[in-house]
Image 1 (cartoon, rainbow, N blue to C red):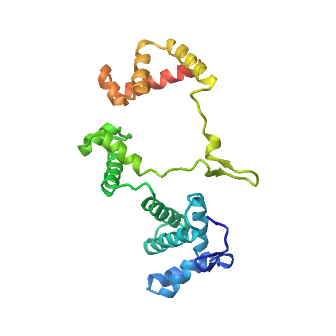
Image 2 (image 1 turned 90 degrees about the horizontal axis):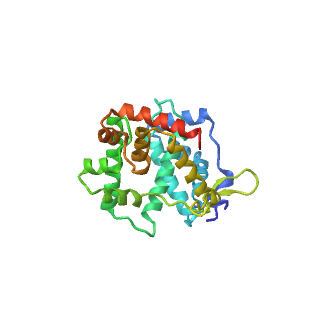
Image 3 (image 1 turned 45 degrees about the vertical axis):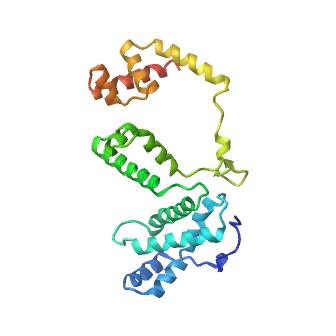
Amino acid sequence: MAIHKVEICGVNTSKLPILSNEQKEILFDKILQGDMKAREEYIYGNLRLVLSVIQRFHNRGEHVDDLFQVGCIGLMKAIDNFDITQNVKFSTYAVPMIIGEIRRYLRDNNSIRVSRSLRDTAYKALRVKEQLTYKNSKEPTIMEIAKEMDLPKEEIVFALDAIQDPVSLFEPVYQDGGDALYVMDQVSDEKNQDESWLETIALNEAMKRLNEREKLILTLRFFQGKTQMEVAQEIGISQAQVSRLEKTALKHMRKYV
């Protein structure tokens, strides 16, 4: 994608205006009164925002003109839904809207198609997760989400995985004038590192210094993947006690690892 091309969709990006805060306020007042010319001027004055966002997606293989048009749709949605009574800058509100619009476009046009029913299941699972987190003041497990939705846990996992945006190993994560640092630079194969078996030995030695209850709690929590509530029910103590004992055990282990 030629992200640095000057003309995109017939727009000369090198000559895009920058609106002052005062200009934005005046234009938005006119927009709220139904002035379409002011709306067009406000859109044009914020196209630099769209340009800055689509740079994040330059490695997805999409044509820059297509991403620019989709980003402009997100910008227009942000303008139409922006609440000036809230103490939030327009750019702060608009950027997530533009990103969301582009991600939907990339997801819907992905060569790996995700069925509508699968996406619906995933979005329902996310809503249930949010509700359970709010209700119980802790993040629910996949089993708890599946139980709430009356679906097999495998179906929930598959649906959530299907809507995740893939990240290219060649996506830059940092650049400061020199060579870029890419995702692949931060990914390592830990299976074959000499440090891995040394860490295993160190962990085993640290575990030996814990009492039996602490060993049991850490085994259930981190080797069997159980929640603090499940551990509490299994060993017959409160969730608060499990939390306290877990923190104490981990603190002791850090002295020896």
